Every structure is written in structure tokens, then in C-alpha cells.
Length: 195
Image (tube, rainbow, N blue to C red; front, side, top):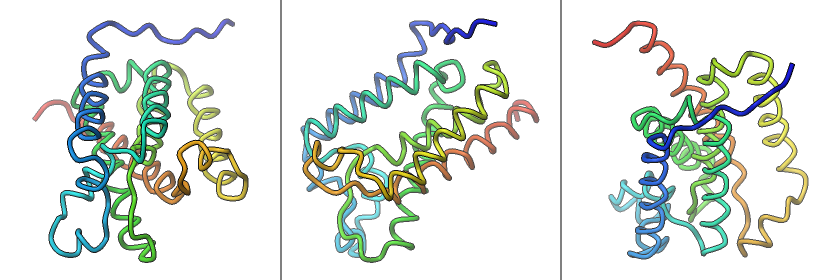
């Protein structure tokens, strides 16, 4: 039996291109200093930073790495996440879960910027939603993600050196949990049909 990646129609790329454009635009208009997770600023009422922190990056290399991650996710999970509302729900839900996890469970963390938590969540959502790829492939992908989340805490992946800052692994973990939760909600609503 031969495995082939799903084909992705050109319209599937509309939502991710919009997301990538937002990342680039907010990076250019204010960047992480204006939009990043900044605990004192959030505490002073700038709660939008809980979401916008996932649209900005520490530098161009950081942005490029997350753009590559987004592209990889679409190549594997494109059919499951290609619809704009599914992609938006997976991204926003994962981003919010990552930020809330960091806010409540990592009180020592003062600043965060980057989409990697949400990207991990989108990958996790793909594992749940991509039913056309079959259970074995999805299980192997989910186990690979779990292995990455567990091992990256203890092993240097070199990413910190590339971006010039520590990697906040907890954002990956919380984002992945958010992706699974959002994907579960999407599956439930798909089974019920339109309201």
C-alpha cells in the first residue's frame, strides 16, 4: 500500500495566506513590543495581547520558522484544516489556550511572542480532524507530536540559538492541548450538522 499526501486545492491556501499576511503585517506594524504577551501590560488591561502575541515574532528568523511550520501543517493536514473557519478556530483556540496556560501556570513568564504554540495546536487539531488519512497515520503523527513535546524540554533542538531567545516549551504543550479541544468541538458540531 502506497501512502500519498492529500492534494490541496488552490482555494485551500486562502485562509493560511491570510494568516501569514497578518503575521507579517503585525510584525511590521509594532511587532512584539506592541502586540506580544507582556504580563504587566496585560495586567493593566491590554488583554488583546493574549491573542495577538501569537501573530508576532521575535525576529525574521522566528517568523520564517513559524511560516515553515504552517506550510508543513497544510501539506499534511490541508484538507482537514483548509476551510477558513476550521483553520481560524484551530489557530485562535490553540493560541488562547497557550496564552491562558502561560498566564495561569507560568507566572514567572513576563514576555512571549510567536505562533509556535498555536502551530503545535493546529498540528494536534489535524491529527483529530484528518479522518481521510486513516487512523494509523493520524496515531503515528499524534505520537510523534507527543514525543516532541516531551523530549524538547530536555534536549536542545537548536531553535533558541536560531531565534536568539529561549523557547517557551510550555506554549507548545498548551497550544497542542487547545488544538485537541477545539478539534473535538469541531467534530461534535460536524456530527450534529448545521444549526
